[in-house]
Length: 88
Ligand SMILES: [Fe+2]
Image 1: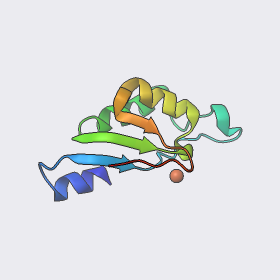
Image 2: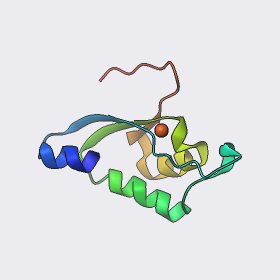
Image 3: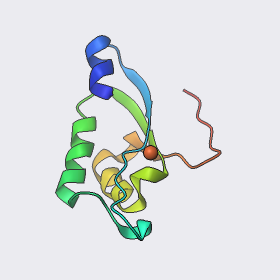
């Protein structure tokens, strides 16, 4: 999705990306992660290659993967809980 937007609007910064990474590994959902730590870190590193100001992600990223991504992406990644609002 991000790659398609970047290709279509080359050189234009992306203010925000909203979306889940679907990285919950299975049941129980609280401490599982689809993929290895290194694979999830790679997703974060890949996202940092794009001119994105902020990525807001939700529950389907999963708390474990969120922590790994946060370690890679830092301030560029924020959790977006149900009911939250964001001004872009
Ligand atoms: Fe999702």
